[in-house]
Image (tube, rainbow, N blue to C red):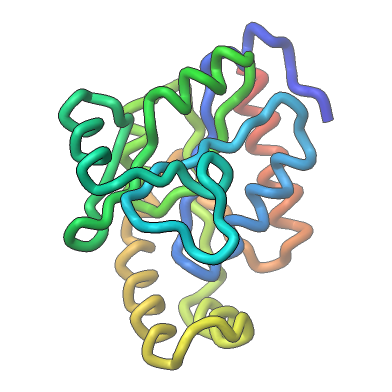
Length: 196
């Protein structure tokens, strides 16, 4: 689906945030596949690459020292020290690169990162909070994924309950009860935002 007029999309951002297991990444990939002129913002991290992860594709991998140096130089739109010495953030250079190409930047970030990005971009961004219909459904999805231990699932569920309190700080809330319905609703939100 083509984007609306170029002038309207210049300098815009889409922010998708959600508790783990809500379907955020699936919805973000659908938006990227549906709309032309969108580009995913690759986050930076101070952790080492895992498995087949590639620098500049999965993350921008920086040493802890490099990350701290860029923070001091004002090189981040937002960042967070998730664990001691383990940073994640959005590089200003990444946003500039995407906007220079004439694309809309799209973010798939945690809830706190989403709130920080919305504060930074203001009306240039649409922030969408995606959530499962209930905490029980979220727990079932995490169990079905089969990637976490029972203990980790309970930690994720507890974190999700806390993250859900952030939902009112987003422009829109999308309940992902049925995936096709969620796709349709997300498309509608994006179209409406880009037409402004």
